[in-house]
Image (cartoon, rainbow, N blue to C red):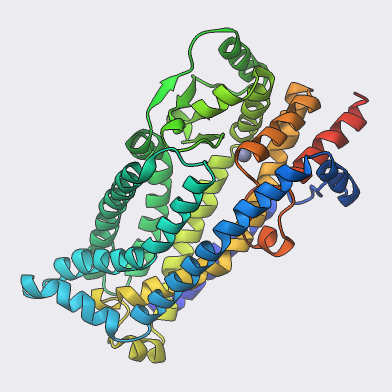
Amino acid sequence: MSPRGWALLALAGLALALVVTTALLIPWNRPPAPRADQLAALRALPADQVAHGREFRAALRPGGYASIVVGLLIALALGLTPLGSRLIELAGRPFGGHWIAQAVLGGLAVVLIADLVTLPFSAWRQAVLTRYGLSTNGWGGWVVDLLKSYAVSAVVGAVALLGFYAVIRLAPRWWWAFGAAGAAGLVVLLSFVLPVLVEPVFNRFTPMEQGPLRTELMTMAVRDGVPVRDVLVADASRRTRAVNAYVSGIGPTRRVVVYDTLLREAPPEEVTAVVAHELGHARDRDVTVGTLTGALGAAAAVVALYLIGSWAPLLRLAGVDSVAEPRAFPLLVALVTVVGLVATPIQALISRRVEARADAHALALTEDPAAFESMQRRLATVNLADPDPPRWEYLYSATHPSTVERMAAARAYAREAGR
Ligand SMILES: [Zn+2]
């Protein structure tokens, strides 16, 4: 069988593995609380707060979607015309067109241009956040954050580009197989090192101070059977007023992180409800499952790019002879951008199901639906959420159930538990 035949077989196998993994590990049969309960929850929220949240979300919307459209157009302009391949040549010219210069400098230049073109929209977003009092870091802090994220992307991007094109040179016929394994490995590695190498670039993390709340949270983790070494507090207040918490990392790098804003804003029983939700993620190994599906998806993407990329009309548009040359990198970026947009609603749907399961876990663990509901109300108030967002936007990109869905879930739990 030819390498192409093997690639088709590998792609089918990876796609099957993805379908089986998501079918088995994602909690699909968890319908949201009845719409009537959601509407009742919506009526329980102050009308002016709902209006304010909607106004804020509406103010973000034009810049947000314009950024997506412009990002797509620039990716297509660079990838589906010879413009991108010329840019790669240009970047390699001072180095005599050496492949490393083309691959790394040219590749980073393409990514940087896409970033710069959408930069005005990021600034717009920051302006809206500042106007509504959600952002606290000022323009200086915003620029520093931006430069830091460019630096992190440049390091990760340079390693990935160098590795990818080195593999192509070493194994011209089978690079897609090694590339797929490498991409999957990179996803796992990033998930593992993100909390210890990348997150500290943006925030300072300190163990939660000793006291009744910390003792209560650690006791709850033990009761839940989830080994947590510590609860970390992030200094999110340097950037935002928003409250949040999350789990990240795998195995020894796994941690539960709460924003300092949450500790400042919310009473202890609500912090407990938030951490119980995060313990749900840890218990169900959501980070590990996410990493596994991400790794399978990345491997499938490399094989698919190899197969689609050898399609002659596409290569002609991009002005290249083969998808394997560094000059074809903009074509790969264009394909990845399109796939990313198509995959967004699927990822959002999976995320909402996983989040709903973590909510259910929090309710069962704390047996305190009242605290859970008031925590949801506080999250919506402080973060200026639309508690019941437009359906189309919810379906396209909402990573969490809506506030009214989560409040209604708490009420349904209270009803069933007879509390
Ligand atoms: Zn969550």
